[in-house]
Image (tube, rainbow, N blue to C red; front, side, top):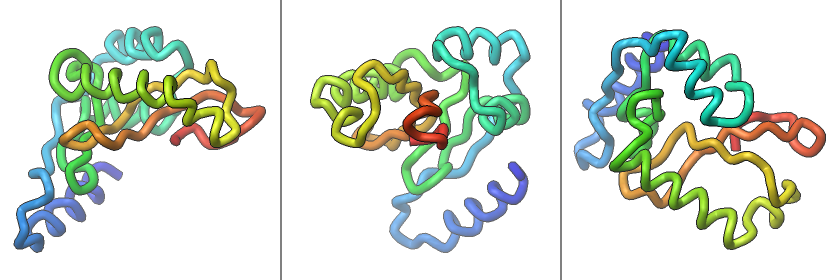
Length: 134
């Protein structure tokens, strides 16, 4: 799965004359201990696909346009800290309630764009939304 994604992203990166896409980059895998610690930080079970992804590469740059996939190690400072502010702002402006999610739904960031204006969150709210990625 990772090699197919990387091959596709590299081809897209090389075919993009604008240079808007980030260079695709993967990292050494996260340890099971790091993944368990991240799960504790998330306050919910990690989605099995995300857990498997982290066991192969602890994050990925150039995931989609300027989005990266956050790993265990890049959660403090930079985009890791910025995405938490973005998440808090999303809560404060009532976005979860606007789409029918409980106000207290756990929003755990898994991806963010370069300027921290868009993010992808993992949620655990099966009674309202069976999908884990929002």
